[in-house]
Length: 155
Image (cartoon, rainbow, N blue to C red; front, side, top):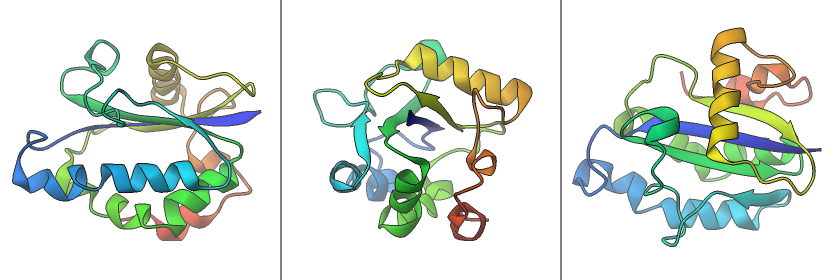
């Protein structure tokens, strides 16, 4: 099995606003790093090489941007999230994104070779929001072998 993850957000300002330039101008850098990491399988992207222009409003509401990827293991995703430059951007997310007030990140297991779509991801996020972490949809707390999120995440 591989691990799929979805992270959604709503930018505080338009993508062209200088106040989110630090995020927008580094997408290619962080995405290239993800793709070069051991364990990376796939990520959702469009012809601009990122997913910020993909219309996810039907699944998640207006103005929501998505990040979705598949990894060979939770440990490999964990290393990318917490032990690379990605962590610096994660820790600045409050500057660029509204707090959504509900779960905005979900993981679930997929068969090797399966690439999830936005509808599937929205369903998994809905499961997490309704039932909390289960084997079908979960957060870091559901994975006993990953621990970095406890000390590395932002407050």
